[in-house]
Length: 310
Ligand code: CP
Image (cartoon, rainbow, N blue to C red; front, side):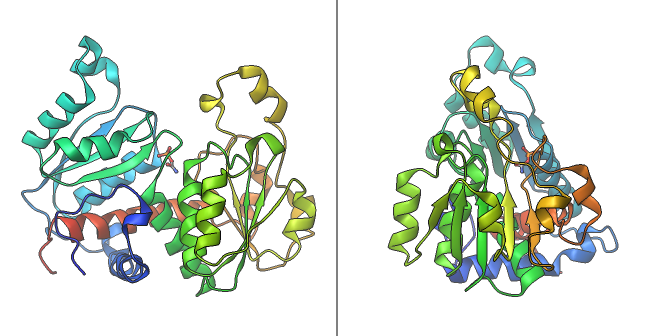
């Protein structure tokens, strides 16, 4: 298993064994992520944080992960403060970040942007979300969270809910859950169904995903309910967004129909799809899930930059 200097573009770049190794490594970082222990494993290393689309969790947790490992961060968080504003291309921006740092974390609105960046960079590129494409580190932290909460993935009934068309996190996650042998149910409005190619990939891995528009029925046997936001920013027509914006809402009434130990996950940010009253229930694990992002990102940075053993 070799991680050193690898680009991380899609979850499909990893075998099951490699995913489990990242998750195992991530667990070791709990006291470091909580600030109870200090590491200088990546002292002298610099991370370029290039975020051309908004982000709270991915950017902050990558930056926190790098600092917690003793490394440093430079970055661009919007196009107005960099030479992108003057018309500089993504490839030239990436070349510069590559010259100034040891690893590049890139979020971009264009699908394929991270793959392109990796062609121009000598150092590893980590895809922090490319349009409706992939978000591999989100997928890893989602798998980490399910394994941590449920101790297994194989045989679990997992419902993916919401915007399955534009939501990049569910594209990566559906593939990975199929790889790990989960029973999948996709719940969405008709117009936001899981793309056919993702369904096909799941089937190729032996899964038999079901699709429905009715959440109440799907939730009854669910062990995990993975909720997503309707991705307003990716709708070409705002009218189409308005038609589906309030399709589903997870609230206490809905949860009364679920198993007592069903967990509710969400990559966040949420808007109205999970009522705040759910936050205090034992079902809600989405804030823990967001914390787990630091662990997984510490593990990835440590592995691909060849961090010193502690
Ligand atoms: N889950 C996630 O990608 O969140 P951010 O958009 O805040 O990074």
